[in-house]
Image 1 (cartoon, helix red, strand yellow):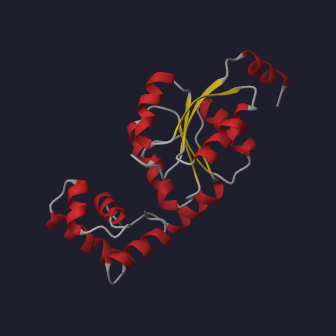
Image 2: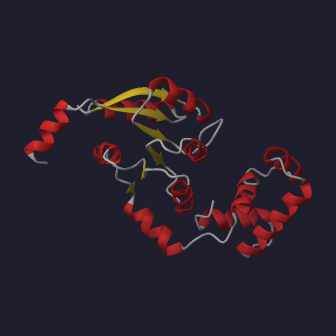
Image 3: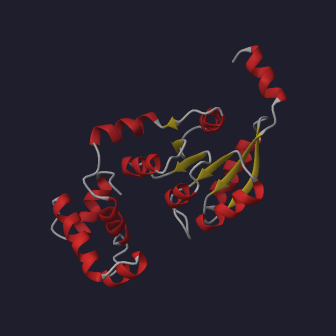
Length: 210
């Protein structure tokens, strides 16, 4: 880093960061580690996806770090609602399908949790500077696998079936008719080459389409 860049960092206000992760230890650890950076300030922490929007309104962070698997709303759902904000997905689930959905939601970054804290801090700075930061290995995997053959609705229905929910439950959750859910499931099963919806879920997850 040049002397000019160091001087600019010393005089600029710290980058305000909000962390959303349902695991208390992980959330606290990220906050503690990022708090050691002179130019980064963690201004808020939340443990549920449906708490993020209000926290953003109250604390006005420059960068929002989102886990994917959270109660209330997933990080991907939150990212879709925070279009226009600088959002970085920080997740254990480094699946190409998640990356593709995150990019569709307009996120500025996607990094995995086992990355060194210096890499995460660097990602925060680069995103603040207007760059898009994507884990390189995951980006290669996503390109290798190619796009998902599933439509958005087929993917939503298949994701809703992950926990073994009945057609009735899926229909109620997604505000669809049961017949429509059956049609989407049938189409997803055909496209994945599976014999049933449980196998379709497994194939789609393995290929990073969910």
